[in-house]
Image (cartoon, rainbow, N blue to C red):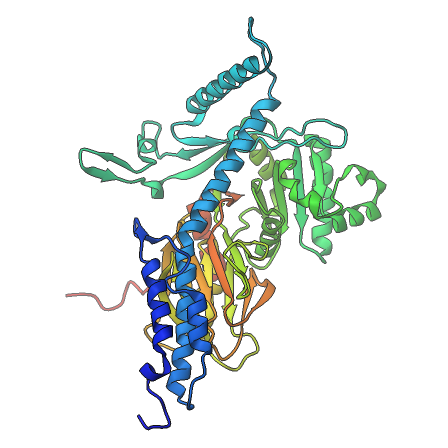
Length: 526
């Protein structure tokens, strides 16, 4: 190295190195493999080091300083993972306890003889809790989940009446009546042997425990045939099934334009009412294609009622029902039991570089198909750093990256070279878009991981993120996108079962493995 270009050791003064050394020593304590401090290096010390005047114009020193800044920020955020997870767990626990206490207080309180005031209330709450636990174990503790334990979210309406949703039960459908597969629903450990659930041979069944009363009908816009079918279906549901009907505001305007008979149809006025929609609706009926199902799922930011999708579009991976016999289909669904597919969703957070911690994120976005990070209008390759549970995965250089659910495996991910996956396989698909490497193959990751995709500081251009093909957001240098499996799946009704509907969709929609059979009178083995 010439005299005009200082060496790396000369660029770093002893005082700067000492400050970094002291910061790294103070942050060396670990607990259960996690770093307790917020960063391995003192960010102030690193900034002072990188902002110190550097003599010469050595490009290697400039690249090293940028890399050092990226590494310091990544290490700090990795160390915050444990604290973030613990805080989130504590917050969910607190919400659960508050909701549980509120639900118990809503039930009628029976005061025991000889008890007064707070003592009677506490004793009554304990007794009700024990009864609820016993009821849960008796009705669904073995091989199912009951909605009355998780969907007790009725809110008083304007008339001060309690909204009661229809309750139902989810259970694992076994191959035979005498099957004991439900005994292996959880991981067990006995005498040194570990066994896991064999869920691949089971379908999920939905059985109504009380009659559904409210249905939300969502339609594909700008279609005359869909509008006519919607009016006919709403009339039938009202007259024959005596159900309360909710529609979108634009659909209600169309129905009232056709006839004043549809005055009974209800809708919402603002986003606040949309957020409470899941507490009023028992069932969702979609009239359209897969895009209508995606739109219906995006309406619910939390729990999603069961969805009955009718095929009226160009694609039918999620719409097994046909409108020709919608009366018979809805009769079967309302009567039950029916097979359902739990379609998992991804919960995405955008974290800007200016954020002070992981909690300063934008509003979370739920996607049913995929989230795509691409280079947008930039002519440069996308440069993305990917982490999985704070472990470095790879750097993506190409047109972009797709993080897809298994329901979205037959969408953009499939076009980019990803595999088709059964929608009830819980996982996240990691698919590159036109990677600048022949060895970059797609991955399928488990559902419990948290993925972080960050635009490094030395990236030549910005990246763009889109969620189910909409809500496009720009990601500048230092910005990150965090994705994990959302706790609220989208339950869609099946015509046969989840496996039969999935195979039918890829045969009819994609003409999968369609070819002529070899002639039987050709050459044969001797």
